[in-house]
Image 1 (cartoon, rainbow, N blue to C red):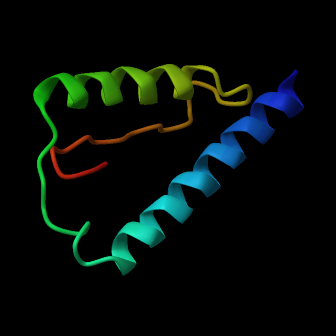
Image 2 (cartoon, rainbow, N blue to C red):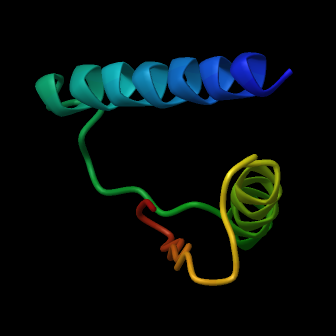
Image 3 (cartoon, rainbow, N blue to C red):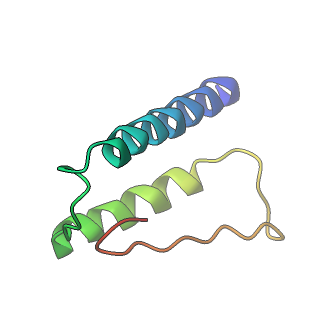
Length: 72
């Protein structure tokens, strides 16, 4: 199960990176647009949930992130 979780997180990160690379290469899509507050709240909840599912972290690990209306 731990291997599967790690694999899914890796696939998610690679796909997000690939999507970001496509967005950066297309100037029409790269226009600064803001997310609605509902979407920002949803991203915060999802990132928090995914971080809590990580199998190997302890009290001395610093997991921090910020969500802005223009990106994470």
